Image (tube, rainbow, N blue to C red; front, side, top):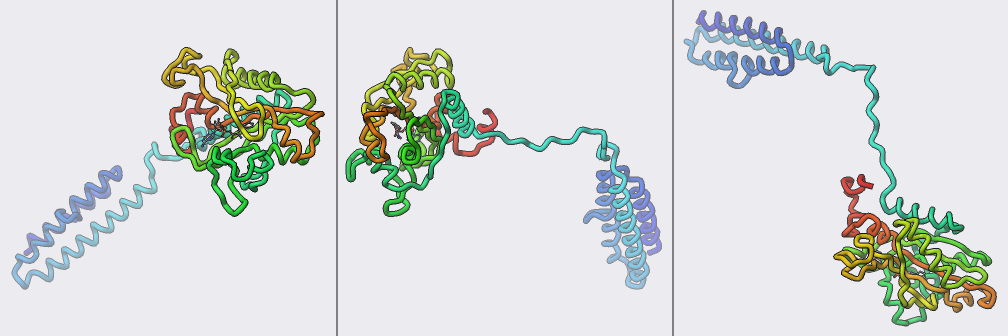
Amino acid sequence: MNDIVKNLENVSQEALRALEGAADAAALEKARVEFLGAKGRLTELTRSLGTLPKEGRPAAGQAANKAKEEITQAYKRALAALSQAKAPSQALDVTLPGRKPAQGHRHLISKTSHEICQIFAKLGFSVVEGPEVETDYYNFEALNFPHDHPSRDMQETLFVGDKLLLRTHTSPVQIRTMEKTKPPVWIVVPGKTYRRDDDITHSPMFNQIEGLVVDKGITMADLKGVLTAFAAAFFSPETKIRLRPSFFPFTEPSAEVDIACVLCGGQGCRLCKGSGWLELLGSGMVDPALYGFVGYDPEQVSGFAFGMGVDRAAMLKYGLSNIRHLYEGDLRFSRQF
Ligand code: FA5
């Protein structure tokens, strides 16, 4: 019995030395496990009390409790001392430069939209905006889309009410601007647009930039000149464009505008599907029928308009293969621009 009490005292002394001498958190933990752990030395000794004759157990039990209390207190003291005296490597060094907070930047879509508007601003255009929830009147009717005409099917519309919809293009702002302003009008209109459309080059929400010029003596040559200057500034100085006959209810004649393929320069490759050209935007001369809706005199003025996909422009400029990259919010993608 005396042996056990002696042993308990020895273990307690050893434990105190180990705990007080622990130089860091790892050494302290090692000492804790060695003495107080489930298979630790104190625990083993305490278990062996059951083998003692009955009359010796109370004294041995008291010695075991005393040893446990001493060791536990010593552990707590050592833990407190260690957390107060931080190692030099963890100490606060007030001479170090501060950590810079992560800084965001414009998303590629906003950056591209801004860049496009800047180019047109230098050519004398003003930037205006319009509502994303539009009426049937501005989105279709005043743009010369006849009621129940199949041309309305060109734009897969998302309705939010009877005659209320998410605008399918930025063209309604042509009408809104002409209603409020007398010619000359030189505007670009950046903004979000919506359609029931979803594949690798089409998104249900996308961005357009509308261009509208109404002035004296404006011809198709002005349209081509402005868009050639734009393509040179946005893509590269040698970028060629071509106009292809097309149809929009609000322009006559209408033209689809292509740029020479940014990858092969017009030779024909996988990106341009061998044609050498990539489609960029829709355009045309403002149909005089629109002037009737806004009170302009078609004998006095003429104009051109165009509508460009900003997502499309960014995809062409940066060689993106899938429009979804622009909307997934993956920082590994966004940080590249
Ligand atoms: C129009 O939206 C006409 N309002 C453009 C216009 C304006 C013509 C003024 C004449 C005068 P279109 O449906 O082709 O046209 O769209 C124009 C551009 O928007 C397309 O060339 C394409 O780049 C982009 N676009 C159209 N649908 C989507 C979509 N779902 N996702 C991404 N981009 C799209």
